[in-house]
Length: 363
Image (cartoon, rainbow, N blue to C red; front, side, top):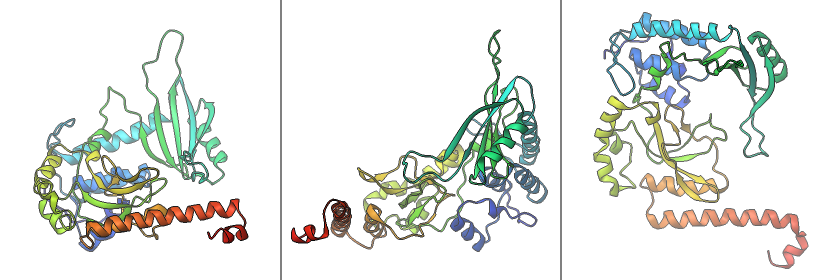
C-alpha cells in the first residue's frame, strides 16, 4: 500500500499515548489511508463529528488503497469508498438514535472513582426513563454538575403484549459537553462499518524496549508494569529492543516472531495489539496478564516513583534489561517486599500501641 504525506490533518493527535505520538512525530512517520483512518476510529477522546472530518481528510489527502480479505472481513477494493460509506453510516446511526417511536432512554455518567471503594468504576446510573433523547441528555447534564467526564445513554425498545419488538438496545457515548463520541446501534439489515476497524491490526513503530516500566494512564486504576515485548516486534526488533538481554533461554520464541507478525498482518485484529509484561498483583505476586496489560498504542513510560509493593518491579526491570543476574533479582525482590511488609506493620502498630510501648518492646 502506497504511503502518503500528511498535510491538512494532524493524524498524530488521535494517538492516546504521548510517548508513541511524540516518537512517530520525531521520526516523521507518514500514515497510509488505512492506518490514519484506524487511528481516528480507535481514539476515545475525539467526538464523532471530529472523526468524520478526519475520515474525510483521509479521502482528500491520502492515496486510496485496498484492504485484503481476512477472517470476519471481506476485501475492500477501494478504502476511500468504504470510508465514504462509513461516514454516512455514522451520521445515519446518530440521527436514528435520537429519534424513533416505542423507545425509552436512560443515562449514566462517569466520574473519578472513589479511592475508598476498590470496586467503584466511577459510573453513576440513574434509573429514570425518558421518551425523548433531548430530555434525557438535558437531565443528565444537570445531574452531573460538572463533575463527570463521560456520559452513556441507552435507547431501549418498548416491548408490547403482542410480542417482542425484535429491536436491540442501542448505546451512545458522549463527552462531558454532551457531544457524541461513539454509537453502538448496528442494525442487522445494515452494514456495520465499525466492525471493519475492529478486524484491523497495525504495527506502528514505538520507542519502548524490553524492561521499560510503563503503564496505561487511562486505566482505572493505572498500574505500572514491566514491559516484556509487543506483539508488533518481529525477530530483528525483538533483538534490537533488548528482549534477549535477560532471557537468552527465549531464543526459540524470538526466532518465531517473524511468523507471528506475518500471522497478525493477515489475520490479526485489535485484540492482538497487546503490550505484554509483568505487574504486581496484590495477594499474589508477579503476574503476567493474559492478552497483554494494554493496547500498545495506549502505554506510556511510568512517570511516578514506584511505591509500596510496586517497588519490587525495579529489580525485575533491571533483570530484563540484562543489568543484573538471577541472584540479585531474587534477593532484591524479596528484600523490597519484606521492607514493604515491615513498613505496613509499623503503620498498624502505631495505631494499636503507644510510642512508649513500642520503644520499650524494642520495635
